[in-house]
Image 1 (spheres, one colour):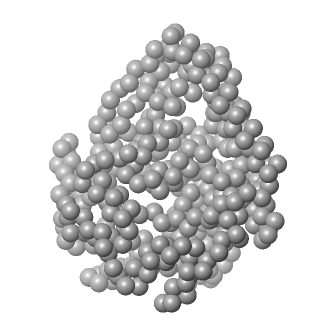
Image 2 (cartoon, rainbow, N blue to C red):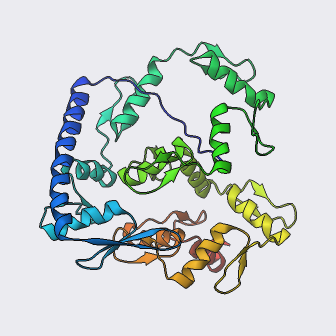
Image 3 (tube, rainbow, N blue to C red):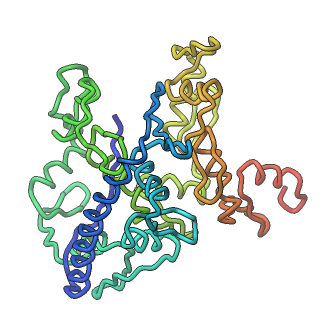
Length: 366
């Protein structure tokens, strides 16, 4: 299993008045949630809902209007519409929220508001948790130094773990397969691949995860928090790995080269997927039409042709898509984002294919 490695800034407190205000907001949240629970209980008495099962996930259907939701939390919010209960609506993207404080936090996604300012270095943050994490970086005493690369750490245990990068030592071995790991936490997380255990549950939806860091990143989908910022185009991301991947769009870097055909890739997963095309291992078969695929992911995507499932919904309009990539491309129509830039002229494009077509046709750019 590949791990999402996040460069987490450590936390501390420097603005007590702001933090006190944040605590008050949390208390208001709790009171609002309690009130909403009572109201929702009354709604449920008069508005039954059904859960229809599919192979991959449950669809929660409102019996009042027939609208379906992939998660029970979405249906619960929707039920309040029938009760006449006021929902807090975002006028930027039309999302609804049960709590006014949830809407307030969400609006930071649109406004780029960064109210938390570090008094020591001037760095700004949208979210209190990231501000606290950052503050600790100024207070840390890093007196445990690696003599191989000069990197320093706050504790000897951190240094010891780091040194395994240089020594290649992997003392934690899996009893079910041949894999070994440099950290015990990584072994524990890997062993859940064999046991199927997913102990980390999202409180907002029905998803569960093997690794707590993956859950942490997932929760940002619900909160709208995107703490990792691209300094070239200003785009924000939910994880450092997503930002790192995005930066290759600007650099054009394609470090993964196929030794059999010379094709190069910017992403390791795309490279590995391509490698399978040479081996022709297609052991994932569709029982509806007999078509076979190299990965279970590709099979799952293909099966949506038969089921008609379109799980990726546009937050700006009513359109939905079978592939996440198709949704991303579509949303650029609403946002106006054009991430693909011609290096020879000043034109930008929404899609990579449009840039390639432009380069072929434009005499200035060939």
